[in-house]
Length: 120
Image 1: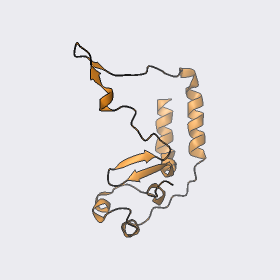
Image 2: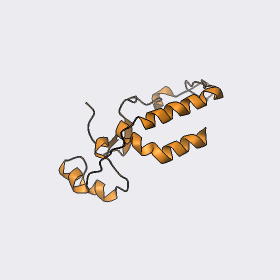
Image 3: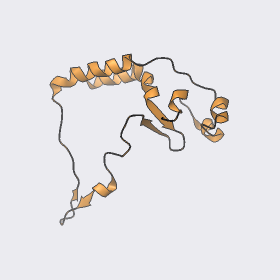
Image 4: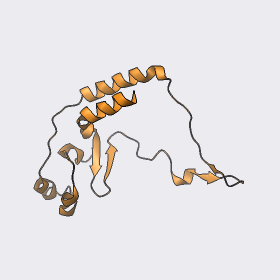
């Protein structure tokens, strides 16, 4: 399952890029429908009277029997994505005010225009 999932993302993960928003100032990729809050914060951690770290954690795990369903669902999501991505030129990104010139100097990856459009 893990190997299949890695191969799926390696081959077709780029098709999921429009589902993400790239923040040039932080370098973070954020899913457009993802949670705004992180799953855990430092304030969620504490220490008991013995000095042991305590925090809420879940041990919920899906059974191995559902992994094939998860892979099929992942393939369906990837296959449903429009494969037409546009990668603007450096000057287009800078002129539109989406990135700064010093960012473009360091960027080594494709950055489709869809990943820089603000969420509505």
